[in-house]
Image (cartoon, rainbow, N blue to C red; front, side, top):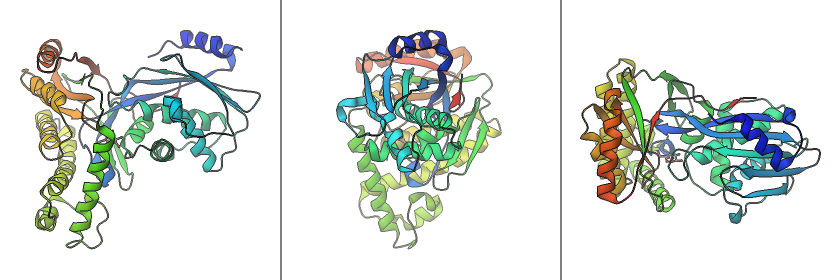
Length: 390
Ligand code: GLA
């Protein structure tokens, strides 16, 4: 957790004034345990909020200015809250700007401007949802200080809209939803079509969740992500020969898919759809297994998820595959998979507590041998969704 006194001093250095007027909010990053590339197909996901994320210090101003600054980079900017436009040169600042813009579109007329200082603890480009964390903490803080009604599901949707429309990144709802609605020690079973969800206690006894960061920048991710999305849409179109009402792959189950999959002509498109349908099925097996304390089954389903993302959906890449393969060789590892969009970013593994040190050491060494890159590891606890700290 960030040192709030030190951040308060930084805020005063940046903007002047008194500590007493500053409010502090926090939103986490997220890790997805299983259910990858299912959210935009109206399927199930099973993510959890992390204990680290983005801390935001914020204070109303007496004019209509908007001050944006971060402790992570020496960039800062003064804007007018009434003239928000996307500007590529503004980099990360487009995330908070997008939230102000989307709130205004819903009819919010800000009472005044604000000064904001962000402190990010999520490694950039690691696929742990640093952008969703910035979006959700900004939306929650502004709505709180404007005295508006807080609905965390609506905050997730507004944040996703800002990511999709203002920032032009075509992501699903999983990241923003997990960051807004997470709860300490619980994972979230989310039905992405209806947004019905259930908090499921993550009781893993002597097993820990270990995140491995490949430190491989996710260069290809945007174009490949969009390509996967349109392949799924194509599959839906062809499957309508059997299911005329179908709008999302998640609306049919595995048995229905198996009967109708011959309607999909292209082998690659059929493989993409097969991943999605089987991955949704894996989530629906994984959650009862976890509830029953059957961690071995849960781990095997994690393995199945990665293998399908590698062979059918083709979004893993040599770095994630090398890390997962090294992880599975360690005794005490029940399962290991990539998490997030893929093409780099992070893996998540279920590791016996007595094996964690060996895991870090051996997986780190083998990963460097294979790829020339140096990995980072985080033993992860599950934290709360967005909240006010001060
Ligand atoms: C990214 C997107 C999510 C989801 C995952 C893949 O994290 O932001 O919406 O699609 O990829 O499961």
